[in-house]
Image 1: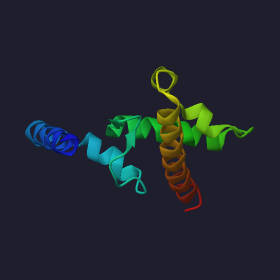
Image 2: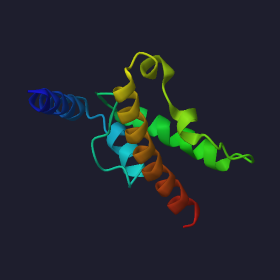
Image 3: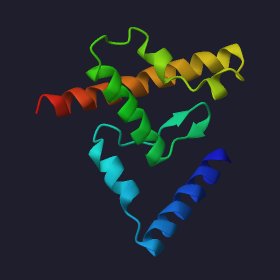
Image 4: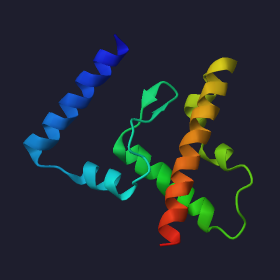
Length: 113
């Protein structure tokens, strides 16, 4: 049921982009090549703008002189995280760490090319 709802939202967004000829979302996602999948975080599908914002935050962490030792902690959305139970928090951190690694890989690939 949730998958069907997600599909309908995706198709609705695609239809709106085509109708309005708004391709900025696609351009943002294309600039982050390693993130080619739907990203779910905290039970919510991230938009292209949110994915790009996370990418910018990861880039800032990587560029900073004193690397953040708690990079995942720096990326946590506490408004969402603080309302979760313990098992949901664990899933959130695991999903966020996987997402962080893909964004970090993308950033390092761009830096070295």
